[in-house]
Length: 440
Ligand SMILES: [Zn+2]
Ligand SMILES: [Zn+2]
Image (cartoon, rainbow, N blue to C red; front, side, top):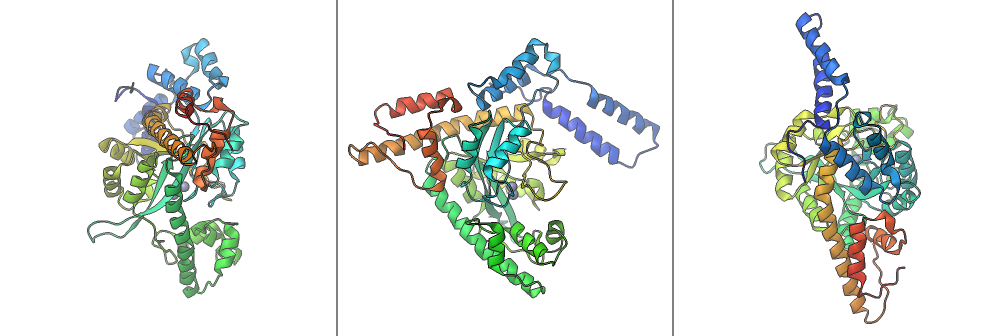
């Protein structure tokens, strides 16, 4: 049951903070009237607001989903017993955007999950660039802690305007899958592998441009920085520039040379944003546009991607809600989400894992859209398993070979059914009843 639109929500509180920040930066100091307005706003910001029924219910729903079987919801119950006023800000810490060393982050997937858990995160999506290779490790690490992993990936794409007026905009699409992973994992894996191969060509092109700017470097050095089997990206080129002494730090490498459209920037052979959104939809994922504030023309990109099936856009950051994008999300009836985009950079200003204050109602609406999609994906995965099992004619084994499919095996072989939804387990039992399945 969707909460009524326009109800007093957590979102309103965030808007107040944002409005206050804008008002504080306005050059109206000394004007007694505006000072009075500011004081009223500050009072409004400080006043604890009783949570709405929808928020309390949404928080309970999200916590139960995040930590089923473990009484992680107990703090919720305790607060409820102590009176609702104790639950001043009914929220569940959620991280929907973070990178591990499997792409361009610095922490291993397990270290990232541990850090998220330390920061109180209950739902964590690993969203490495163009790979899901870190997901099995993240899920394994999460078995120790009451934290729910959403298998994710951030897919590189490009938006080409249909008219010839503008230049290409790099677009990143976040894909969120259910616990059982994508339906048709091989298809997704092939697509991602194509993008990763393109990244080597792109790194090479950036190095050619840097060479023409008197900053020669070798591709093998950049690949060494990226690590074994990791497709090189801009960050790895930037690190190589720091190592070679061409710039003082990563920030300088980006602000002078590697920024979008910069003198050493190169686009890869990325697919269109529309084709990525369609692929995510076809493989049972939720498609969300990452950091639309970085786009030259967010309205045009969002309109096109919505037509392709986009489910949501990032609107929340660690510094609050971006109101212009929130309006666009309303216009196109899209989910409003967000995450820290944590990479573990050597940068004190980088927002930490779990630092984005995503309203619990936003998480609730996300799950409302995601669960039926993930459910259909599970059905498709089981259908493909039963087909394979029938093909093997009596043999009761099956194998799904691809890094995106690995965690399907992991889930199926897991005895820890409490980590899955009761409904998911039910589907599993029903669908596997006729299949003599031996987990591997
Ligand atoms: Zn991105
Ligand atoms: Zn990212």
